Length: 494
Ligand code: HEM
Ligand SMILES: *[C@@H]1O[C@H](CO)[C@@H](O)[C@H](O)[C@H]1NC(C)=O
Ligand SMILES: *[C@H]1O[C@H](CO)[C@@H](O)[C@H](O)[C@H]1NC(C)=O
Image (tube, rainbow, N blue to C red):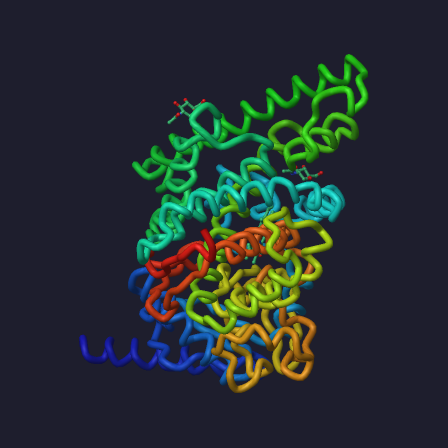
């Protein structure tokens, strides 16, 4: 009896698997190694370090299969896409995120990252026009001052051997983000202090833990958990801080408006933070409620500092591992600034072409956000297949960055490839690090400018050495290093 039941189950599973693979000829090829019923789910077990090793392998397999394949997680089909044209097609057809983003909603509400259509569309076009190039250029002084601060703080490590440079960079990036997003100094006397920073880190940790425990995916089960109580504590700190800043700013704005002073009469700072811009839109054009401002501002606090910090960390490490690249950066800096230690202007930025190539190439080697996801709300026809409505799609940024279009040496760190048209892929979608299409990163000019200024100051002052091959990575909401202490620095001149 038992044997015949087992045989029946096996046969049914076999037919199911066969059907799943062959029912639709337009489907992309399937990843090898699927087990009956489980599909590929057994390949996903392991910690964040193993997960990244596995995902990297998957990227190469996906490219070998022609850039698109399907994997099965239990009964669900998930598509992986590493072909740049197909990536863009999907990114510009489907704007919905997958369900997991709802975990962050209690924190970020309907901010851009977590909102669904049509709320997202309206807010995105509002914010796109608000954060134009002129606004970003207003941050030049802040970026320069912050880069100087980092250079100064790094001085304690000069000539002392390997140290954890991420710790310095991360603190600096958080300070910069507080200034540009909230318009507040980060510090003991501020509402954005170490308690706030700790709550933000804990909140990320909570999101990852919830994701790792399938039974907590259900809101009802999660509601009664200790994790949820911890989340409530963090949210109180995070929301209280942004609400306090908002309240203060609003009062200032109204006071200035009532006294009808012109902008030069009152002591306004030279730049407007994102918070100030949103507040202005809210008061003058009735664009947002207080809660909506808070949600947008919290989203940027989250999106801005960790991504930039991890990239700057990788950039220093990569440059430190390639002395020839470092000398070229220094030569370029020297040709623009001579022996002067002046601030970096908008004009200087356009002259630092080699440094820019180094930044792009570092993002290609270590893409801080290595994949993004979309929920397909319609069928999408790609070059060689059709993806089915209702399924999840992983847009594999790392895969695009290893596509054969980069040449046989796609794995090699080679900033020159960005400067020589013969070495650059013709495909205009090669710049995937900030996502592609209309729902790409809102902060890409902001991030590019701040990273360039930071690195220009650092390499003008220090000679960096390290070995990026000793760095092990893991993936949670982004790609991170498992440990520090990979670079050492020396002052170029006393
Ligand atoms: C080098 C650093 C950065 C990288 C690599 C990066 C990368 C990305 C990527 C890949 C996305 C798409 C996410 C998705 O589709 O799930 C994204 C979205 C976003 N980023 Fe960034 N980002 C960076 C810095 C910043 C900064 C500095 C800000 C803010 C000032 C920012 C604000 C945002 C926002 C608001 C979104 C949501 C956009 C939307 O859904 O419309 N990011 N970022
Ligand atoms: C940070 O600011 C909050 C709110 O103003 C305050 O309650 C908290 O004690 C401060 N924490 C530190 C470490 O200064
Ligand atoms: C975005 O716009 C929609 C519709 O105008 C609004 O209901 C929603 O709450 C907005 N979200 C934020 C965070 O401003």
